[in-house]
Length: 122
Image (cartoon, rainbow, N blue to C red; front, side, top):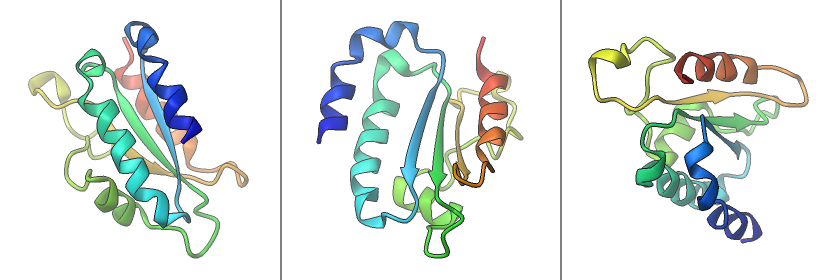
């Protein structure tokens, strides 16, 4: 619970946040419940309501890792995303939220997420 305790102390800094990146271990499916709770808390926080948010599902180089659809389902974002930037957010009230899968050790996938995020940072 150390991570959650640290994050709760960060609320004083929310006014300076330009974007949020949340990393999920895609092979530790038992902890998806914890991630869903924390992601939900951040997404629903009014002081972060205009902040773009992307979730990285890590360790896709390991065969038992959750798929992107699985991760979206467990975190509750199956249909509530920008479809990798294909939704025009200027014409809607949709908050920029997206899920990307990656492998940090293989250096793949996370670049797409950061490119997506850069489109929504003013």
